[in-house]
Image 1: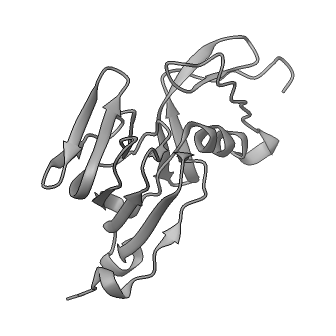
Image 2 (image 1 turned 60 degrees about the vertical axis):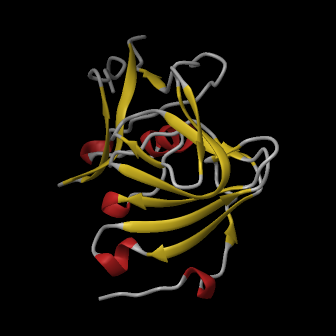
Length: 187
């Protein structure tokens, strides 16, 4: 059994690429390492603070504990208040944050303990993918070109969507796209 009290956990300001506007603070109430895969965070947004659109490859449940916030997908924005519980399915592109006039806090329960993945992180991970015999995958993120989500284009000019990031495989971590990347001839 593990018991933690939020009052005894230090809040840390989140400064990674998942934050769109801040400040946003996190308290790690339960680490994925301690639980064997489930992470629990208490996340607090100052008025107007929010995350960027991001995707999880696991289920996430948010329990609103304070204030008024917004949880949004590409298709809708919903206002949430204290006591609301939100389910976010794996692969659902979404963001959450405070309204302009209210502080907002929620408990985030993240299955598998996988870190939040923002589009820039996905592209960075793709760019660092290496395989045997010197094969290397590369990608660049151009936010102006990809408003509907993150895509990658291979050397032949084919464009594919990143469907799921950070999948553990026998050869390391892979990222699932909806096609096959083709190298240029001679690579």
